[in-house]
Image (cartoon, rainbow, N blue to C red; front, side, top):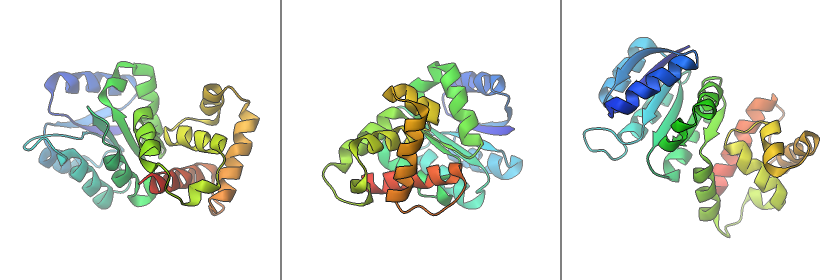
Length: 218
């Protein structure tokens, strides 16, 4: 699979290239700003774009705006955003595009856990999601006492959905909550039913459930 990396820090970019190589990706291009990123994606049509949130010239949201443009113009390219800080509104904006498939938002500190980071890369490139646990926590906190479809869920089901938003598998959710995988499967089926999600393959319904989670937290 081909990938494009957009990161203005040369040292971090070198490290990311090595990690993607370990994960089996071919790095087709590297970019230090949003303009070069968009040109590289248009030229190489990669399966994955790894994008820094803040890049030259303004170091504000250039990466996010470029990522949104990539999702509009090249919907088959998965996007994984990297950020120094928790900025959950960027995650919500990105997941709201193109049915939310093939999307990730992680803090840069996660790169240090190479095995976990590679798992997130592969999951996003395959059409899944990967939300940083700190982002999920902020979304839940911001939701506060507002009401919506998520209020139909039990506290345990909300815990399960939050872990699904991080991109965890059933086994990963079970390990975190110290329950059986069969119990997790039952919770997930209940979540699908309570959120009135249409019948579809399991992975797509998981993405739809995560989108409902983000909508409720926005």
